[in-house]
Length: 381
Image 1 (cartoon, helix red, strand yellow):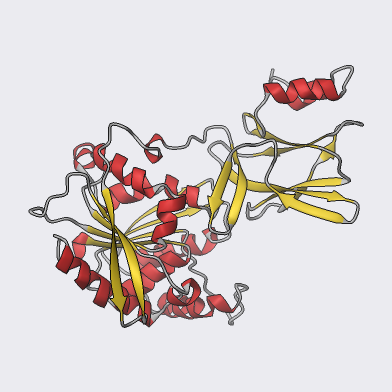
Image 2: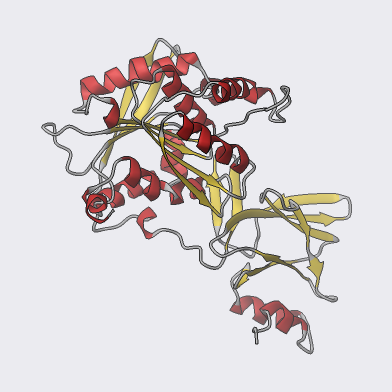
């Protein structure tokens, strides 16, 4: 017989008072994960409390229930094994509404737009290769300023050199859109150190580039594509020992950064052999022009509609990943047969996660080891 949930055992306790709740909270991490049942809690004076999450297809605002006359509120959500969900709590006191992170949960995910609390459901584990490993020799990151005529500004890139970097060796190149965010929110420096150390990923030179006006530069911008293909790549090849052929060049990005990668390769199809696209904002319309994304998506939708009408090969190999809890799962799934039909080899991965930097971090080993496999992958796959 299934064991009764902890919250139901607490409800049955007599007397159910604040001291009992104190002891209960001391014994349990919040949310309380028991199989596929996750119990979210809030403690405090309130008229109404909700869990606000970002799981597509589910109510985004889930009401919590007060336990008797106590200060404790709760709701039980069912999350499949391996899920990772970011959420906040919304509290109403009279006419005042307040939304923020869960004060009972210390686990927080950060992003450029703020932070959210994290629920790690049963079976989800943060990858050990995302944390600094004292046994992995660290690579070096240096700054490289690139003056761009195409963008009419200076772009300061961060260049990752592997720990055993030698001028006499030729390296594959990975260019990462939203580079500072990948470094800051997706732990990409220790990820590279660890995966290269473990022989999962080949030694590579990785260039982290960041936008000025992101919405303009990454939404099918000819100027951005010219910067990457005609200014950045030649400059890098003049400064570093790179494999000067498409199979040794990969573009990478998430969300709008994935759009920037795809549209750059579309404009310069003979430059890049691989693309690594995470949760691409591949929004399109089958009928009419109403896409619901606002005017910032207009140039993206125009490009995607044209591409879907006349697909063509823009690289040899594509790694595509997306979270099944984000709205972009539908367009990403829809694009896989389009990419394959255009003659590209595609590796597609889904995760029980949302549109988040930690989701993209968690897919890095799959993506990087497929694009640039290390000796370990050659041996065992």
